[in-house]
Length: 337
Image 1 (cartoon, rainbow, N blue to C red):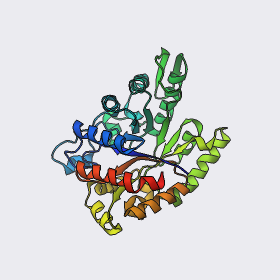
Image 2: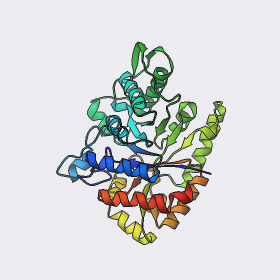
Image 3: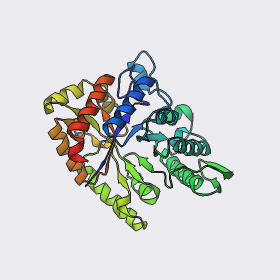
Image 4: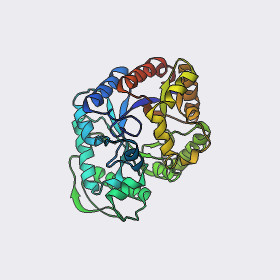
């Protein structure tokens, strides 16, 4: 079974998965063009609007978080075949869904139809509360409602919508996206996403999930999709994993534990990865020698993975990240793709 393989782009990762400084515009371009040259399907950037509390406590300077849609417009003009995905676009932090739809449709045209959209609630509620002080909103419901509104705007010539969180009246949005069906993914490990993906989405983006945990959820996704009259094979299972290759497993693990990426996963143990207590991040993720990583990837494929999405290469400087991308493309990708 063939799989799609894409790389993470550090649009909002300084101070989280990478040190500060790291993600200046020149480096974003280097990473994107490197991914294209190496044959990665796409790059996937994340979405932050303000700095997390623990990052402020750790670093004396603020990290630079680049807005992903604007960043992609710039990168698309300097690439030819590379696709661009949001992993994820945090819809609850964006108040006007019509403006979001307009930005997405515009970017899809300007990139030549090379856009994919992953949406989710975001890992840190404190970010949402900074933008929506005092709000009691259920962010998962906001994302679900937002995707419904986007689908209406992308489908109908003129449409109106009245939801709990989003509303608009008599909107004629043109142009529609360039792609006949612009791919939309739900990102997150919540079981609620199984239903949401099965009903309306093109893929599911869980984070760092081992095969034994992933397989029953994929089975449920396929069963729910079939019950909705959809073809389960048309829905991507696209988890995100950390990658670090070494000559031996021990070398890879030791280097990974020296990375900012390792510190970031510790912070996510209280949110996105809270259900994985007691599990070794080194075992779950694609960390080890090339032979070990290939074996792990094959087990994940057997559990239903169809897209290794936005792989996050653990590195403490940009050159190390580029080297890891190249080694993965040469030693692992041909064996698993």
